[in-house]
Length: 381
Image (cartoon, rainbow, N blue to C red; front, side):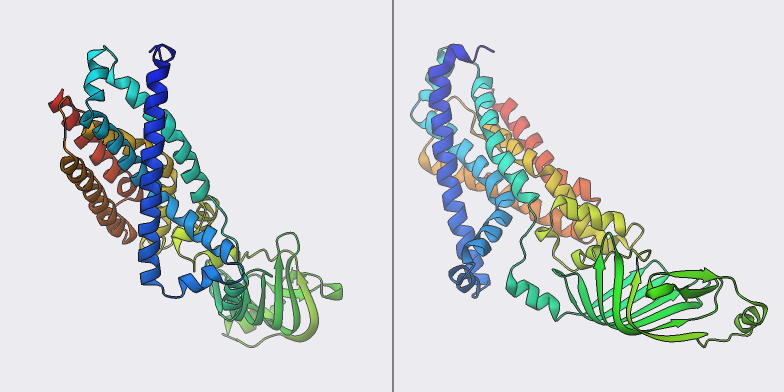
């Protein structure tokens, strides 16, 4: 395709598409904002308070995956329909210019919002002070397979530290192996867990008996003695060791609380890296629990191509030879947006319940829209 041969036409199409897409984007952003203020009356106060710019940025970036594809669809459709309304599209076709040139220009420009959507979907949401205070007051429970159970009265996600901890560890048969009670505990990826002001209780189990090392650094497993093995066989459930400590460091205990903290958040606030971390950590967990996170991951992977699919959908609908009225333009645009919105929300609801595979849930609305548009395109040729 000799794009440079039609550089004046390409510039005209590009400027028209950019103008209409930006206009539609601004209109949709205002609509989304009005509905957000209506749903959450405190949202405006957060935007106007200290740190409000950061809160607004985080909220606005979260809306981009929704706004951008609709803006691309509406901008492309309005651009084409106004070309038809002014009979410019008829003149372009009469000059022997292939319609695929306009589609190529629009798809090329669509890479810009597609990249922005990708960056917005993969952002790491910053934690503000208010969120930190809320998280600090919330308890945390972690169950690591069937081997350990953690209970924190409160946990601070920013400091990765918890208060009033109880840790229960079991052997493969479910017998107690050790317990830790502590007033405070801190986790570091390269240093494991550090407990302060607590007690360490060791029980006979199939793993042996844990012995705390020198200076309360780590512990080692000692094989059961004969009388200890007999205690275990007789169902003895008391501790063999009950030791208090001011500080206990367990570097080999690498139970990371971050995946459990992420699992408490809404999937829409998580980046692709965070979603992958959750799905990897909780493999084998109930499908219904992980379904919203699997769906969100599939949507993020599809969010950038969705802008391109929206442009293709709009081009096929807006393509035609005859003149079209403004009323027809608005009607066609609304029908297209409503069809896509109904498909998207319906399949999202089914996917979040785990009734449909996440990949199919994310792809189906776009695939259906593109097939419908392609059939419409060929019927009008």
